[in-house]
Image 1: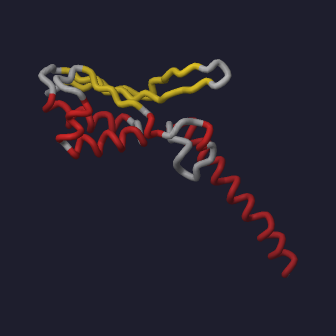
Image 2 (image 1 turned 90 degrees about the horizontal axis):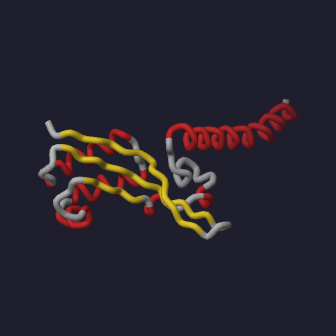
Length: 134
């Protein structure tokens, strides 16, 4: 009986660790989860999400100026950099709608890409949302 428990302990811990890694890699590839979250497996293989850019078209003033005056927008931009899903994009667009005179607002989140072999910096569009004021 003790031999069976030792065998179970010996192999259950590595299997649980492999299961956590598999779930993390699945979430990264299928649900756009950052590698820095959910266990951090592969976290140093991409730039930190704080370097993601949030770009809002059709604004009457700079997004940085709006973030300084409105803490709700500043918090939503931080959340959007970390979790760039459509729901967060829509919430930010609705918050920003009061700062724009246009009837449509486009919110985009861009991820920086660094190719060290070619010494090139570029960026990749992660997600975008087009909001039309009601």
